[in-house]
Structures are given as C-alpha cells and as structure tokens.
Amino acid sequence: LPEHGTGFHGIAQIEGFCGETRKRVRLGRPEIIEQEDRIILHANDRVTGIGVSSEFRFDAKDTLVVSTRVSHEGHTSVHLQRMASALLPTPDWASEVLTHAGAWSREGHPARRRWTTGRIEQAGRSGRPGFDGGPTLTMCEAGTGEDAGRALTAHLAWSGPFRLAVEKATDGSGQLLAERLFAAGECQLNNGDSIELPECLIAISGHGLNGVSAAFHEAFRARSRPIHRRVQFNTWEARYFEIDETRCIALAREAAALGAERFVLDDGWFMGRRDDTTSLGDWAVDTERFPNGLQPLVDAVHAEEMDFGLWVEPEMVSPDSDLFRAHPDWVLGHPDRDLATGRNQLVLDLALPAVQDHLHGEIASLLDTYPIAYLKWDCNRDLYPATRYGVARPGDQTEGLYTLLDRLLAAHPDVEIESCASGGGRIDAGIGRFVNRFWTSDATDAIERVRIQRAASLVVPPEMLGTHVGPSPNPITRRQIPMAFRVLTAMFGHFGIEADPGNLSEADRAILARGINIYRSHRVWMTGGRWYRISQAGADPDVQMVTAGNGAQALLRILRTSASSRPHAPHIRLVGLQPDARYRLTELAIEGEPELWPLGEYTGAGLMSHGLALDPGSAVSGRLIHLERAD
Ligand code: DGJ
Image (cartoon, rainbow, N blue to C red; front, top):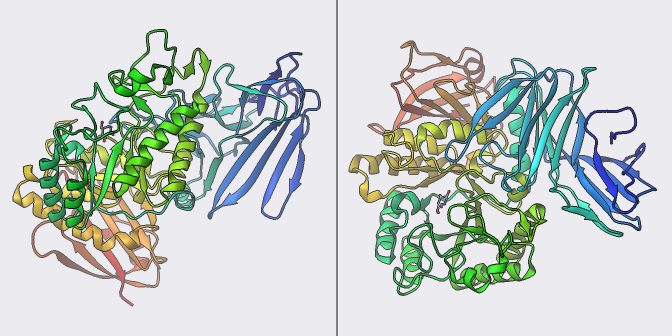
C-alpha cells in the first residue's frame, strides 16, 4: 500500500485528509495476513482513523481478484480524494500497453503504445465506461500477439468514472493502478462509514492475448447471469420508430419463419414517442400505436413460439414528458438553471429514494403486466453534470443503477437483461453481474463488426456479445455487404436479426435461415467454449476458432474483409486440438449446395503444426468449418 511522504513518489494507494485538522491519511506499513485462499493487506491510520483492507484471491480459473475496503473509525470526517482498488508493481517484461480507442459505432480500434517511461492512462469520466475500450488495460512484452508472448490485463468491475494507469519511475520500476474516480467532494467518510471499492480483475498469460481472454471469459461466466442465446429479432434497425401493432405482428411472423426465437420491441412503443425528442420516463404503452396494449403482440409472438423482449431506458427522462413535468427536481443538475441535454434527454438522479421507488414501480409493473422474458436496458447519453445542486453524485449514480437492477431481479429473477449504452458504451464486469449479455455496438456493418467484436472479446466471452445481422446497405456506413458474410460475422456471438425480413430478397432470406439453423445446432456446445483469435488484430483474413470438450469439437471461421493480395492458399495453423486425435472436417456452407462439404480427416498434430490450406476466397466472404473427433 504505497504512500507519499515515505520517499516514494509514484502513485499512492490513498490520498485524503481530515476535514478539521487537514492532516493527511498515512497508513504506514501494512500487516500481511495469509489465509488458505487469499492474502490480505491491512493498515490503519491511528491519526485520522482510516483503515484499509486489500484482499487478493483467485477467482474462477486464473483471474486474480483484488477487493479493497476503506473504513473510518475516527471522530472527524475524512475527505478521500482518491483510493486505488488495486495498485501493484508491474512485471519487468511489460514494455507495451494495449488499450482501445473508439467512439459511437466505431468501437474497438486497438491502440498499442511503447511504454518505456512515464504514465499511460485509460480513464473514463463520462459516467459510462464509454466506447473507447472501457475499464480495461493490457500490458505486454514487445511482440506479444494473440497466441504468443506475455500479457497482463487489468479490468475494473465498475460502470462509473474510472482510471487504469501504468507508470514507470525513473529507476525503471513500474506500477499498475486501477481505481474508481471520485469527483471533488464526493467521498467524505464519517465515523462508522465504510466504502467497498470496485473489484479489480487481473489475468496474466504466457501464451498471448488469447490466454488472458480465456481467464476473463471464465471470470465473466462465473459472475454473470446464465446465457441462453436464443436467436433474437430486434425491431430497431428494421423499423426504427415506425412501429405499431399491425407492423410488429407481421414482423414477428416473418422473423419466426427465419428461425428467430425472441422478439424484442425496441424504442418507440411508449406514450407519444415518435422520435428521440420526447416521452422518456412515461413508460405506458402508446395507445395510438398499440390500442389494445402490448398483449395482442405478445400473443402473436408466443403463437410463433418466440418469447418477448422490451426496450427500456429507465435512467433517463425527456424534458417533454409527463414525468419531468411532474418532478422537474428529480434530475441531475441544478433544476433552477439551464439543464444540459444529451440526445434530447436528462438523467434521473438514481440516488434519490423517490426516483428509485418510482422506477422500480414502473419497470416491475411492466414485468407484472406482460410476460417479458428480456429487457434491453439502454442508456443513451453521458451522465453530466454528475451533480445535484452542485454536489457531486457520479458514484451514487452507478450504485443507484446497481441497486435498481438488484431490486428488480430479486422480484423477477428470470428476466434476462442486456446492457446497452448507445451500443457498446457500458460493457464491464460491474454491470456484468446483473445482465445476461451486452449490446456490442450500434454499428451492425459486418466489416466494422469483425474488429469491434474481436476487441470486445478480449475480456467478454463472445456468447455474451449481441451480434446481429443488419440491413444492407448498412444504415450507418452505407456499405453493401453480402448476406453470407453478415451471417458468418454474427455466428460466434449471441445471434440476432436487426433487418426487416420483408426488405430481404428471397435468396438472402434463405441464407439467413440456413445460418440460423447452423447457429442453433452448435450454440449449446459453443457456449462456455474456449475461444481463440488465430489471426492477429487487423490481419485479413480474420481467423477465429472455438473449441469445446477439451478439443472434442471445434468451429473454425475465416472472414476475408478485403481482396487478397495473394491467391495462394495460406496455411492456417489451428489451436486447442488433441494432437493424437483424428478430426473429421466439414465445411458448413452458408449458401449454395450441398450444405455440408466433407473436407477429409486430419490429425490434431498436423492441423496445429502444418495447418490447413484453404482458398482465401474473394473479398467480403467467409468460411465456416466444423471439426469433430473421428476416433
Ligand atoms: C441505442 C441502441 O444502441 C439502439 O440499439 C437502439 O435501442 C436505440 N438506442 C433506441 O433509441
């Protein structure tokens, strides 16, 4: 628990002071308590009364979990300016740092930098983890790739303001920091108070980034809610705000004919909502569009043997809404001054008990009225100003969200929840405890998705990432992408459809239906599988693989996003197979006849050392190959 004033000038574990005496918190040397499965560092400051306990233990398979708690037993209040969840020395081999850059619909651009001196930081101050990689930072040795080299990834399980940083001192020693950020005046501890800081998850690999992913995937699976991966149809990119009972019932029938198993009614179903300027907060069904409530649609969905999901954005309110007119003082900001809108909406103050009760009542009543199997929980703006009457609230907002989710799940334990924030703006292990999946990006352009999904899979298991087949041309990029490529890109995540089936050609509908059929036949064993990114980030083709049953079967996917510079078939060396076993390889054709192409039998050793020579294919095409033990 390093601290300043001791000859140490790096990042301190804690910075705070007593409000009355202005004396700094000084922890001194911690006591080290070794228990069977954990080590605890414990220190007390007798002057201010602050005590810190930092606990290190292994979770799931290989993830180190650091949990830190601060308590206060002094008589005068202490202001904490900052406090690290984890602060650790870095390994000497770490000479590069990998984070991800991005913005709305552009998530997942790898940003890899040399780290020889000074500080590299990945911070989020917008109140949501953000589109630029969220609370994750990786250190590597030079040359570390997906499959080789050393890497250490740290992730903070927290959906609010955060900072991860590495800093190298002039003597060459380095520190890794992970912390929840406190705003000025946000954290004041009085006698008897304590605060549990967000957990920091850390995985180290000697086998490249795939090694840290394997550990993180297990950690997410162990902490999150069960993953069922029913094929979803979502109305958003199919119809945007152009929805009503008749259209939705027609969409439900068409989606079911393609193989969809869940119908999700996105934005636009509630009172007066015709575009994004009004009505958030008024969670009553729009009677013009759905004159009989949602029940006729739900019945039609059930008649097609699908379950029903609903979009909500509970944390927000439109200035033009009955809720805001009734409670203008329920929002963040200063109700007497100009309120800063984002996407024409304001943020409700989730720290207010009245807001908590109201939102719980509204969402619970929807869940009680309709058999809702799934909530798409959206959050479409940053949380600023994170103050109420000028007093900082950022962490309260995140805690308030967790409390609300917790309460709802206690009464409705079976409802599945998706974390969405204008796409992939809230993907982290903090909210991960309450949700079954994440919406990966608003970009459904399959070429963009190759990069975005690969980046998200660094810590999140692909089965928790919403991967939908969108329309062509894509509404965001205007790119036209063949249906087979869109289907293959969606295949390794949680498959969905986000396009109006009525606008698809018959040929495209057939390709989509076949793709869904393939997905449905393999999803059970793929869930919980071991994922490998075989090609390096940015390489073309993108090659990924999932294995299960200790290499008993596997799916190999090759996606070529641009034209090949070499017509020669590259040898793709596979991983995760049993060297002594023989494998039967079958190409699962997404289009054309026959549907299954036998590719012969090979030994695991041959496939892993010599590799598989495959025609690289033309631009924007892909291949899917199933491997099964033949002996
Ligand atoms: C942002 C989400 O990411 C979209 O999928 C959609 O649900 C819209 N919000 C609706 O407003």
